Image 1 (cartoon, one colour):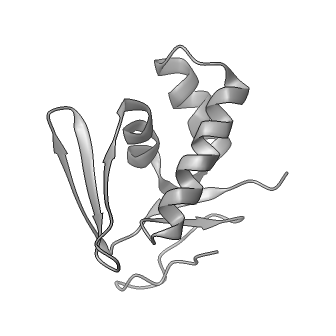
Image 2 (cartoon, one colour; image 1 turned 45 degrees about the horizontal axis):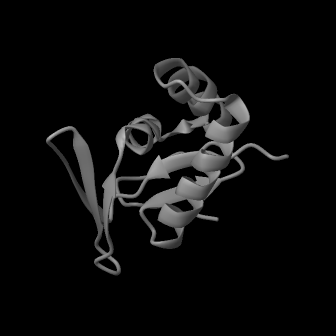
Length: 106
């Protein structure tokens, strides 16, 4: 299976409130409240770290969760947020080419 690299879109509004991450898409005004696990993935989405490494190094270490279960949940989370343009996903590291939001999006 190909690696997934994820990065936070710049076309969002995000705030941490009371231990939960609140995110709204600027493109379709979809609003999400992220639990602790999803917030951990969100905060680690730097475009350079593969999702599998985020799951191994963050999710499985910080939460009592099975590796396979954590990966399935992370994949669903990433798929849902990428459909709203909140997370950008690629099979290669995502790099900004200029000051605009020109990140690859798959």
